[in-house]
Length: 381
Length: 257
Image (cartoon, rainbow over all chains, first blue to last red; front, side):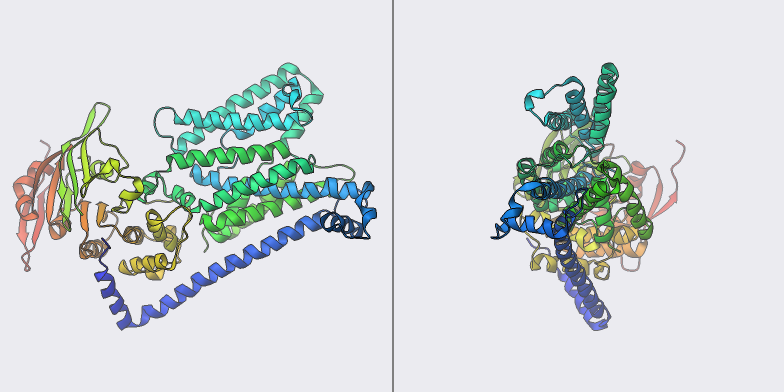
């Protein structure tokens, strides 16, 4: 049942006779090889850069701790080296090991998760303007947080009730979107976006209503602050759960690169290529909801990372998700680490919400890439 | 492998788009479906390549019924070159053609050396190998269509469905593409706009009008001035060139009546 390549053999012999195309073939093969090795090199460099960023970022902060002290603490905690026991306790140890280090790791997890989910959502709804929050997750989370802050709902969850309520709000909103888009026939990409917008509008309306009714200036301020995002709440016990969840989620998405590519060709083409994307799409959105839910739980709303990182990577390395997903994960993590560092050092004795900084730093970088490459939706050349 | 539809029908609400269609493509045959715009050609093909679900009747691929097969299985038997292939995101030509290997892949299976070889062969067959690393969206309409054909070839299926494949091509590429397809020795079912192209390449033709089959036979039998007048409301003459091939000349456009 193999296709007869008779004609191909004919062309080949023709090419061989001309001798011209054969030369071009070599050039082609080389170019492809060069791109692949470039990708591997970049991935390796980014991985090293990521580890370096974590280690360097913990030397920044308001507390005046020398670089040497920082690494002595880290060495002690990682390897329990003899002779450094004095760094196992005390204020310096606590700042470095209990505040700065988990914070850097959280930045890695959240940046990675948001960037990968952004790339996935752009494929799932087949729209380059999508971000991880497109399914109403952002307004669902905000509503959850508002309810927790203003009305004290969810206090039974303990100290991080705001985060937990935001997590549930995000999940509830995205499930609602999935449910609505499944009513009455196949949910296409356009239907998902519209359902997402509708649910967003309802959730925002409820949040505004609660804010208006409660009329509590202090609490309104903390809702606003929460909605701008912060990594300051990082604790080892949170990070120990969030990092594995997000890491596994991203790895799962990496294995799905072929389906993600197929999504961009559209449902019809996907069917002729042997995959019905219906169920696949639902699974991906559930996984995105969980990952983004965890990110929201730990860090509030950090917009823009999920939009610009996938675009920036695509502009340089093309649309193939086999490369896009890991590169997004690495770039997103590195980007968020340094944004967080800037947040900590830019204002004296206080911190800037990371959401503001991400937009401030990210947008110009993104515009630069966009203008330089002259077109906006990726492609290597 | 043969493609057969038995009493296939499809309605959108009250509008019956396909009425009791039975067509058959025997193994290795090149069968064309002709008919005016809106006659249901694409709809019928979409039923066969599973984008639409018919309300009634059966569709057979070989001796298996279509809707009892997995989508993956049918994608190993039928490849499709559809009309519009516009992509919002950019892929390289090689990546587009590589997607033709998707139905042969398990979930975590990587593209192997064999797949790269198949992709290169397919690109050479459609004479697009030099474009392998170009971005798909920078190609002309005709080049894109050839790349999509290469993707269908990379699927290595015994059957090929074409939906007006020569739509945006100039005459050189129209003939080139059709020659190519005919040279593949696979079962082909194609909707064709241009009656002369249909006459040149098809073994048999079906005429579809208002969702019904109104004629079938070889191009010689079917493409007569009377039938063309009945189906398209235009006057035509048929002539034979020096090779004895059939050509259709249109002498008068559709009248007011």
